Every structure is written in C-alpha cells, then in structure tokens.
Amino acid sequence: MTKPTAIRPPRSGAPDPALLPEGLADRLPPRAAEAMRVTRAMVDAMAAHGYDPVQPPLVEFERSLAARMAGVSRNRLVRFTDPVSLRTLAVRADITVQVGRIAATGMGDAPRPLRLSYAGPVLRLKGNGLEPEREQLQIGAEIVGADNVAAAAEAVLLAIEALRAAGATGISVDFTLPDLVDTLAERAHPMDAETVDAVRHELDAKDAGGLTAAGGEAFLPLLYATGAFDTAIAKLEEFDRAIIDGGALGTRIAALREIAALVGDAARLTLDPTERHGFEYQSWFGFTVYADGLRGALGRGGTYRVMGQAKAGHSAHDEVATGFSLYPDPLIDANALNGGDRIVFLPLGHDRAAAQQLRADGWRTRAALTPQDDGKALGCTHVLRAEGPEAL
Image 1 (tube, rainbow, N blue to C red):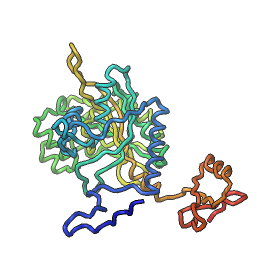
Image 2: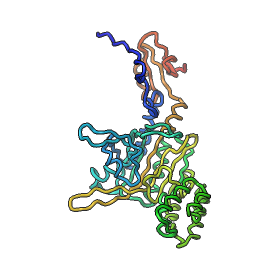
Image 3: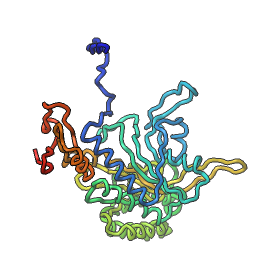
Image 4: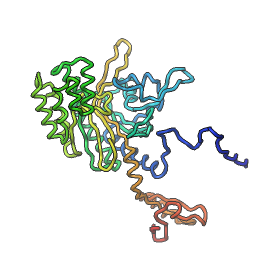
C-alpha cells in the first residue's frame, strides 16, 4: 500500500485549495438529503399530471441559450470558449430556455400541447445583495403549444401542488400582466419607445412622482390596483373603464378572473398588474409564488413564446407556451433545520431482518462497524433493541 502524500499548506499568495468561488457552496447533510427529497416530491407531483421529464445539458452554445426567447439577458451567463469548436459556450442560467429548444427541435413533431418537466442546477454570473447565491436548484414544468386560461390555471395549480408536496405551507400567488404597458401604449395611450421605457421604470419603482415626470400620469391608478385579488381587480377594471378607448384591458381582466376562479381556495391570491421583476420573457400573464416563513419568492411562471425552428420548405414560427420555475433552496434550508429525521443505530450483531423491516417502514439505519462506535455520536436518534427502536 503506497504511503499517502502529505498535504502541504498553500504557498504564500496562492489561493486556499479549500475555498470555493464566491456565491457557491457545498450541500452537506442534512441539506443535501433534503434537496433530493424535495426534488423527488416536486418531480413526482408533475409526473402525476402527465409531465414528462427532460434533462438538458448544463452547458450549451451561448447563442442557443440567449436567442431562444425574447428578453433573455446574456449578462447573466457564465461564458467561456469551447476548446473543440472554438465557439463561445455558456453555463445555463435558466432551464426554461433549454426546454424551449428541445420542444422546437428534438420534439418539434410531438403532439401539442407538450408537457415537459425538469430539475437541475443553474448558475448566474453573479449574485446580488438579497440573493448572493450564484448556483440555485431550478425545478419546473412547461406546457408548449398553449397559453390560454386553462393552461395558465393548470400551471398555477401545479406549482402550488408541487410546493405542498415538498412541505411548503401558507402558499400565496401574486398575479401580474407583464406586457401591460406595451398593450396600453399600442391602443389607449400611444407613446414613443423612450417614454414607454421610462414609464415601465417608474412603475417598477412604484414612484408616483417619477411616473408623472416621465409622462405617465395616466398610469397613476395602476400603482393602487394592488393587493388582495378581488379588491385589486376591481380597481384595475375602474382604471380600464376610465382610460381613452376604455376596455383595452377587458380580455386580460376577464382572463385573470377566470384563472382566479379555477385556482379557487388552493392559495391566497393577490394582484400587482405592473410587477415585472423576474419576468424577462413572459407575455400576457405572469405569477409569483410565496410561502409562509420563507424568504422571498419561491418561483415564477406565466405565458411566453418560444422561437421556432425553420424546417425544409417552411419558415420558422414562434410557438406559445405556459409554465413555471420553482427555486426551492429556501424551503430546503428551512426543512433541513427543522430536523425530525429518525436514524436507528444498529449495534454489532443486530437482527438484520428487524433492521430491514425498519427501513421498509421509513426509518433510516446506521450500522456499527466497531465495538467502540457510539450511536448518539454518529447522529442517531434511536438504537435497535430486542423489543424494537429505543430513543437515545
């Protein structure tokens, strides 16, 4: 047996080999186990509704990741040069874009609507003050070929069910209309592109003074059409009736009411029609999901368009889609801290049949390897006795 090489301390000025890049971290027990459990629970919930899983690669050509959907930012991508093709590669920052590519290419001839699910890590170029983590677990589902009320309601309900299956409670869903300003600028309030951008910015900031200065005084009522769904949708209807060419938002308001009715009491519903944070490529409908006791949003979804793939003799055409992405890391952390894992210590010479039955009943077991092994020190909660598990 060769003698192990001694670990030498790093030379002065050299990076510590134990350090990880900023924003990245190991998942250790029990968090790693909880991440696997949450992933299984969510993917199983989606599979039960007919969603087939896909597993796109972690890295693709940058052009493919950045050009499949309008609004996707290249600034989020970690990029590098492929030594084989000499083309620019990128680590995915959003799996939804990859699912769009799969739907348009490898599954372009599959019957629609096409229901696909996925789970895997994504990497951002850098974090921010509120979310310093650069790597996140993303789990989601997409309906390719439909963006109607039924598809939107199915996406909302499935996101709620997946979160509940993973242990989330007190779920609330906030509806939004990502293309609201564009819709109004086309019909009721014509504006040039510069004014549209300024109005969007001030609505995002919820700044009444800035909105007026930007030429968006007519949009001030939208700042107050927020809150509990029934109250907020009534205020949005008042705004819609009051504007020039009243009724410009009529179909969208009706759709929101239908979706809310289909969701029913599955979650608390709120409305913020001008919210655009995190909605890079969504079209007429968007939603954000929250849960009690967990920081920030757990996910977002909505309707969008996938850029089509040209075929022989046919030009490319965009395809509508509806879906959601969940980022369950806060839920994983909370569940892991709550503990509750039952591990039975198996002394040397234990009854193997009894231990097998415990595992079949949902217990975890950890067997002694030497007479000196101590169950409590090894993190066990119980020890196997002749009469069964006994608390330590």
